[in-house]
Image 1: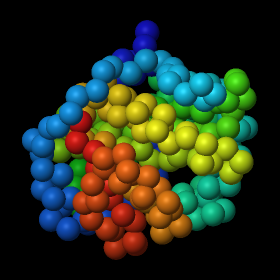
Image 2: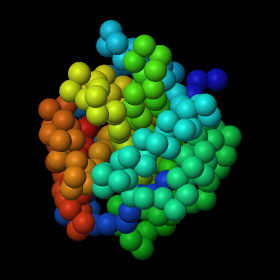
Image 3: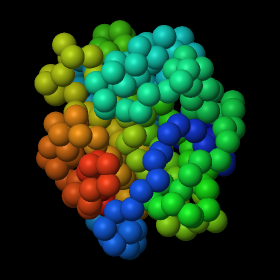
Image 4: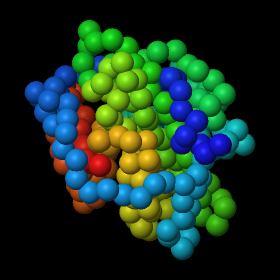
Length: 222
C-alpha cells in the first residue's frame, strides 16, 4: 500500500499555538486554488545526485542526530527524550502507531486536531544527508485544518547545503500536498532560519504573517 494512501487519524510532534493576523488571512483565503502538480510517489528522484525516500527504523540514529543538531541551532523545539520522540514519529510515519491528539495549529482555545506525519530521508548515492518532515492536517471535523499540509522540519548536512537540494525538496513537498488533496502547503520559519524564508519565497510561497514568537508563516496554494 502506498505510504501516502494509508491515512487515518493520527498525531505527533510539537506544533505551537499562536495567532496570525486575520487568522492566517481567513485560513489563507480558503478557496484560493492555483497551479496543479502531478501525484507524488513513495520515493522521488529528479536530481542526479539526491533522492528522497520514506524514513524507516534503521534511519532512527541519523534522524535523531539531525534533530538534535537543528535543536542546538534553535531551528526546532528541543524534546525531553529525542531518541524516543524520533522512534515514535517513525512508527507514526510507518502507520504503526497512533499518537495522542495535538493542539490546534492556528489558535488557542480551538478543538484539538489529529495531524498525520510523513518522515523522509534525503540521500546522496544512498547515503543519508538530510531529513524532510511533512504534516497532513487531516481532521475533517475541523474543515479549516483539513485544507493544510505543512513542511515542519527540513535539515541538510552543512556540507551538502547550497548544492541544489532545495528545488528537489520543494517539488517533492508540493506533490505530496497535492496528492493528499490539500489546498495549501505551509512552512514556518523560526528566527534563526531566515535562509529558509528566502527559499520559500523563491519557490512561490507567499508570506502570510508572523507569529508572536517571530516565526514567519509561508504558504503555497496548491
